[in-house]
Amino acid sequence: MKLNKEVKNRIDQYFDNIESEELYSIAFGKYGFVENIDFEIDNQSFDKIGQNFYYPNSDNSLDTNDMESLLLAA
Amino acid sequence: MTLQFTGYHGTNLIAAKNIVSSNYEISKGDDEWMGNGVYFFINGLSSKPEEQAKKWAIATSWNNKKKIYNHKSYCIINSIIEVEEENFLDLTSEDGIEILSYLYDKFEKKIKKLNINFKPMDGLLINLARGEGILPIDVVKGNFYIKFAKERTKKITLRTANSTICTVYKPNDNIVSSKIIEIGDIKDEIEQGS
Image (cartoon, rainbow over all chains, first blue to last red; front, side, top):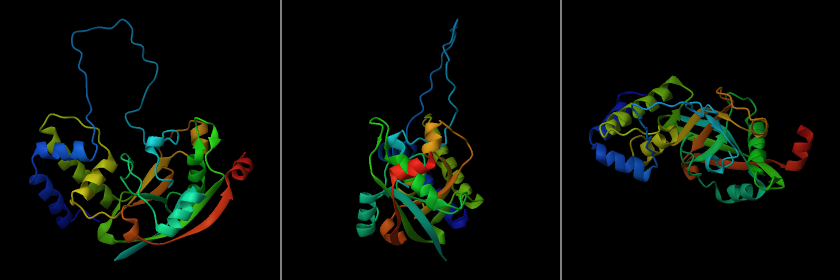
């Protein structure tokens, strides 16, 4: 499969003909997309921040301890 | 043009017998990988995908709460996968990545109008594209970093992919044959490896 005119058209047609609200409802309701909730803290200071761990922005690994993320015994 | 792959699926003996007699059932919830489908190790980053399937079967049999293996035996199934080129998304190639990227950009542009941030996941996008009839994707191939027993016990997490896997969404349509090629004792394998 290549991003040729036909494939591009199929993608364009879908997204051009759907309202944002409807797409939201389908993506988050039917397919399980998850919102990222950011907290903004203004005009506050901290004497000490208890940061003990650093988590990378994305972890591309598959943890076999996490049964939720297991592929079907691939 | 029809493409053909040999895929290796690692599992336990009971599941393997069910698969060979009545085909695979798709795995749901693998959102961050390549979506809801049946997963196989294939030739690519590793020239021994059957070994990876074995290691996967053993690693996933481990019950971390009870500290035991859930199964006595592991099993490797060899499946022949066929797919038309226009229904095959290859995420190990520039062509495939361009499609996923384009799909993501269009999705993001529409959702951002609602001032919503979302967690992007390849598998969810693929599920959406397939489920809503946007693209006729039947099989996807990708490179991933997969943790087997060694990576898990030694807590190794690298960014560099170590496996090429492929996902089949409609096993009845795209898997033309499956046969068990190896059955072994998990404890024997562990003892040999230690």
